[in-house]
Length: 323
Length: 191
Image (cartoon, each protein chain N blue to C red):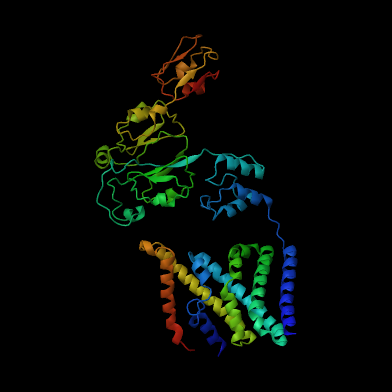
């Protein structure tokens, strides 16, 4: 008899609770927006916080309700943007992809050191001791604080210098926030020609602390055919809008601080079938690398061509290809 | 025992974390940041007050008249689990703001021994309804105090230079032990 009542009471409580929950589930049902679920699935799910929201779930909510633009996730690639835009039924206006870049090339063999740092292996800790052990005030300390914080495995430390793999970088901005020397900046993904130095001291002072630092000699500024590089406060700055990556500055730079692989330089190539001999390309070429009389097929002098693409963009017949 | 002394006893002297060692799991798990720790503490207060009221009524109206007091534990677990589920659904519908704030902590509390502990203590010590209400506000308030204090300590520890082998959970457990010893100082307190 006792067992019966015990089973009855417990079973009864269980059944009542179950029934209550079943009713409540119907009564208090909140329809979850299918859009939110779809957007959430399209997001990377790393919960990195690069967008400014606490996690991917919150961003998915914000995108679905229209509070955030479809390309609010700085980490997604363009495929994901298109997918999200498809879910939301709008066309994505995708900005140029940017990647983080270390604006310093002061590795242990290039830069000198102020003192021997033997403390905690962390850039912030090192920076607290007289601004770090590199003699250069703007130098990468290379203790790997950015490496630790990168969720995408894009940063490696090579010879006491942080190097960012631009293929892996998602421009979430965490390394930029954490770097105590502020040597990491966002640059366009396509940009290979970059001044990898931020030291604003005069040439002699730079030479004393680093073999490759920018000395502000203005050789690049004088030679740039596109007015895209200027020396301000003893440091060369490239206007990425104007730069065509012709790499003249890379050739001229006496300290080789401007990055760019001369072997990968493109060459103009004229398709003879399409060329009508208008001479526009020859007039536009900043280095006089195109020859040919009016009404005859033009030719590119390969040795002179710097691969700036100016001729290709100006050709009315689209007869020039950059290869 | 006056209600005030009951409150202080449950709140500080018999602190649920530091002297009864109940609810250690969320205490260690959700104490990395003060914000989330406070959220968890408030959710615990909310759930314990509600469940102690319901379980008290069940005890008085169902279990005692039928002579089934020995079923307390099972019956209370059942009720607490169902109650938390119900509260979660209710909040989701009626107060999305509060649901957002408590959201992730509510399911965590379902299986928390602190909740069961408080409602069983209410019965075991034969508190009246008012007394058990006071106890079930004071005890989780002690939980809130403990977890917020501990989260503050952990935030400081995060930026401290901790030996490699003690990083993370080990140093947190050491800190928790020291805080427990500190709370031992209240044990002689009588009001």
